[in-house]
Amino acid sequence: MNAELYATTVAPRSSRRAGRIKLGLIVLACALPALAAWASYRFFPPEGGKSYGQLLEVRPLPGSEAPDWPRGKWVLATVEAPGPCDARCERRLFTQRQIQVAQGEAAERLVRLRLVAGAVAQGEAPSRAEVPARAAPHLASRVGAGLYLIDPLGNTVMFYPDAAEPGRVIREVGKILKTNNGLG
Image (cartoon, rainbow, N blue to C red):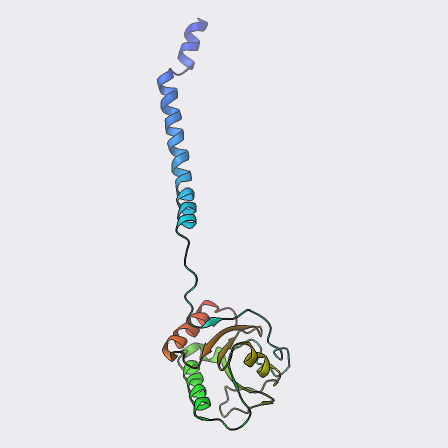
């Protein structure tokens, strides 16, 4: 009687083997995506970002803690030499204005600033703001002449040289503003 009970409760050897094969296939099916992801990352590493502008080391800008800094807004700043604005300066200011206007609804989130080393330039448009002049030498010494994108927390983010193609800058600034919708 015990032999009959044992024979009915214990599966035959072939069905145990089939169960193990099925279990092994299930484990393999679960582990395969993780192994494929690891292998593709290891043997085909991803390329870096494809930013058009130069990504700057994120550091607070001196003067961004001042009470007249446009808090909670993205800032598109340009650094100018003291004196009258020459043709190159005028082109940069025109490009700066076009970048802001081209943002559409997000244009109100972007403030244009013209920083003059040693002074603060008054802007003709209401979207300009006065800022402490000590930010100008800091920016000019970092990369050079061009446009700087500063986040709402006062950190420098991107730099676009004067030779940058305005259309590509407009698209990239638009993407940055859209991606960081909750910030500024």
